[in-house]
Every structure is written in structure tokens, then in C-alpha cells.
Amino acid sequence: MALRLDQKKALVAQVNEVAGTAMAAVAAEYSGLTVEQMTQLRSKAYESGVFVKVVKNTLARRALSGTEFECMSESLTGPLVLAFSIEDPGSAARLVRDFAKENDKLVVKFAAVGGELLSANDLPKLANLPTRDQALAILMGVMKAPVEKLVRTLVEPPAKLARALAAVRDQKEAA
Image 1 (spheres, rainbow, N blue to C red):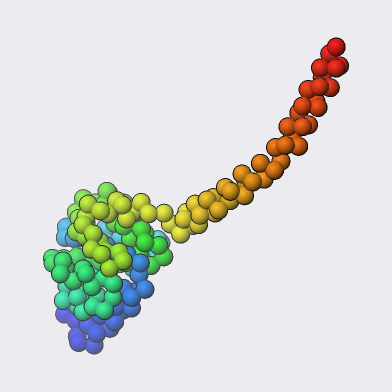
Image 2 (tube, one colour; image 1 turned 180 degrees about the vertical axis):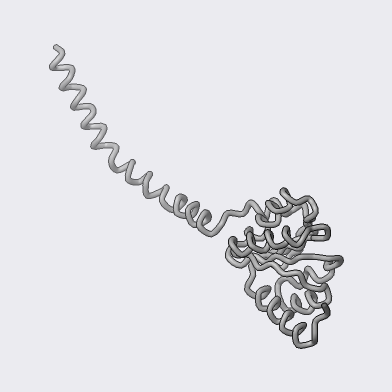
């Protein structure tokens, strides 16, 4: 079913709005997937905070213009599904990677992050980025380590004195 002009404008505006706030994007060829498989992909995307849309390439080029994903415009060929990471940079890459493991018909073509186009071979690097919560936990661990070391250093002299006195006491009791 062909889209009317107002529907095309609305679709371009929607994708442009999402691309303007997204952290990363992944494009994958979906030919050969059944409707049920695409529905599964969309439901998993919704659960993980990823915006997934199948858009005609000419409309996608218009939607991506003026965003950091404009670098993808040259590579948009063939039937592609676009996945945009909304919450953290690696969520779309993780979604597509995991779904492609189960369904070999989904083939990753390229990805983009920070205005830079990445090949399909770089997808695992993007997918292995920590989530926001994981990154905060790593940061807190790094920030907490010097304080813990300082406390251990300050506590050690009195503890060493207490151990020495206990050893002297035990030695006198044994004698």
C-alpha cells in the first residue's frame, strides 16, 4: 500500500525526531524474515528501549539529514530496517546481534555512532559497550578505590600495634 504525501511527511518527521535524540543506529537487511519474526523483533526492541522502523531509503535519507546519522545516507540501499538506540549506545547493536543469532535472515549492513559510519564487523564492539547502569557502577568503583586505600592505610598502624601487643601478651602467658 503506497503512502500518501502527508503520511510520508509524518514518517520522515517521526524518524528525524528519533534520530535527533538517538545515541546510535544500526541498519540491517531483513528480506526473508516472516511477519511473525519481524513482530518478535519489534517487541524485543520495545522492551529494550530501541526504536525500530522500516522506512523507504529515499524517505530515510530525508529523515536522517541534519542529524549525526547523516553519514548513513550514502549506504542506504536495499530493504533495510533501522534500529535507533534511545537509552544507551549499545542497545540497538545488542538487539540486532542477538536477534541475528536466532534468525540468519537478518543481516547487519552497517551502524553509526557519533556521526561515524561503522561496518558490520564493528557491531560487536558497539554491542559490548556497557549500559548506563554498568558504566555508573564502574565509575563508582574507580572513584571508591582511592578512599578505601586511604582508610586501610590509616587503620593499619593501630591494628599493627594491637597485633604486636597481643603477640607480646601471648608470649608472656606462654612463658
